[in-house]
Image 1 (cartoon, one colour):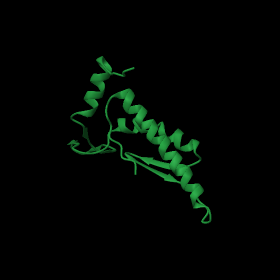
Image 2 (cartoon, one colour):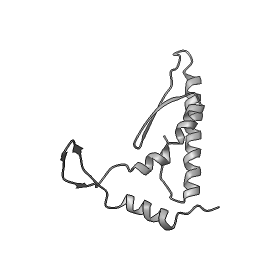
Image 3 (cartoon, one colour):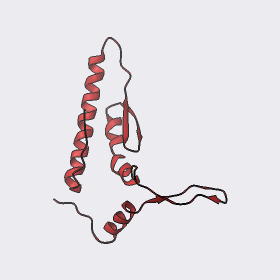
Length: 114
């Protein structure tokens, strides 16, 4: 099954990804607009947000910000192998989720898992 976006939805996504601009407003004061040349788009956060459920299902704590996800797991010094096996299983499942997204979206996102 192939996943595709077309029509109004495609136009909305295209317009949100091109000619991105920002400004800062504080009270009545507003800075001049600046064209964004770099940065992580908010759609990437939507793409990554379901991963939180996968991570939590392994009993691993995490922190997500923009394009960065950090995993946190307390381990006993005398049994790090167990903790590392949990992290390995967690990251393997996260990799499966992103692989599934890539197949459904056909976008070919390049994710690096070390």
